[in-house]
Length: 304
Image 1 (cartoon, rainbow, N blue to C red):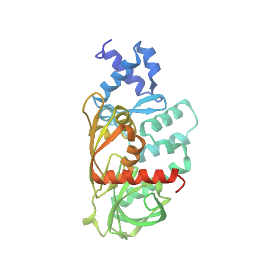
Image 2 (cartoon, rainbow, N blue to C red):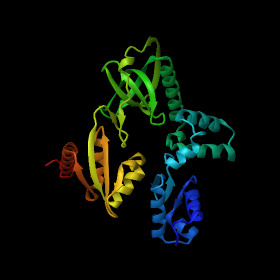
Image 3 (cartoon, rainbow, N blue to C red):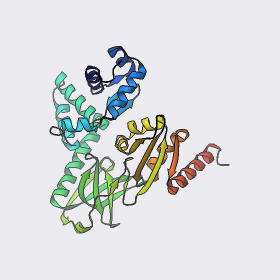
Image 4 (tube, helix red, strand yellow):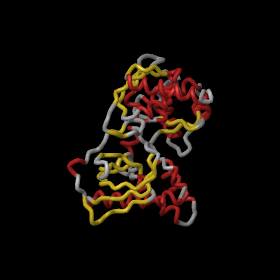
């Protein structure tokens, strides 16, 4: 057994970057190695800039991997560009070529909503109008925006100034609240650009911090967790950006240290793996987890 075999590494990378990915069993048969050795190879790849995703029993290389990012940096597309190409491929005569283009766009841009034509048409329209507003420094109305935080659906008058998170989010100054906020493009029914109303608060525009759990805000909480092997692996697979904040303590423990803007994302992750996670800091996270655990116990006891 040699973990330094270039041929084995290339074969594994080739299988992991295929549209369907690969399974542990397939790699065992392909390379004639044990399951344990396959996981050693996976760890070697992770330590060298690869993000591995786990979907069912299949493993794939995440497109945000440092190696992949460098490789495709000169030919990659934004989400809005990918949507445009996907729409062209969808409107073309059905063929092996059009299906291959659609499949690669779905795979490498990880936008499952492409399969829903009305939805991806709406996304393309929203991105087009938001880009116009940003370029021309115009205000915009986000029509029927669905807020997961306040659980409301309402119009929002904003000054959009930057697309972020691979064009899935837009950074805006909300006129009514005088605050900078991050809005999800997919949660807008429509975007109306107000041509007669230009930005009036450009000096207050600034990009809020987005944590590894994809929550954005101006307030940061510094948290430190000790993770077991299971929770460390799941964190890397479910939240690839978290990999850079993971540091090995020993063979069984990983230290996870980062800033979060909300306890919701990290709390949801920690509660699901409470037996494999120890909170080192902070007190706010501990209080949030206690409150969440008590709410779960109350719900499961029938409210008694």
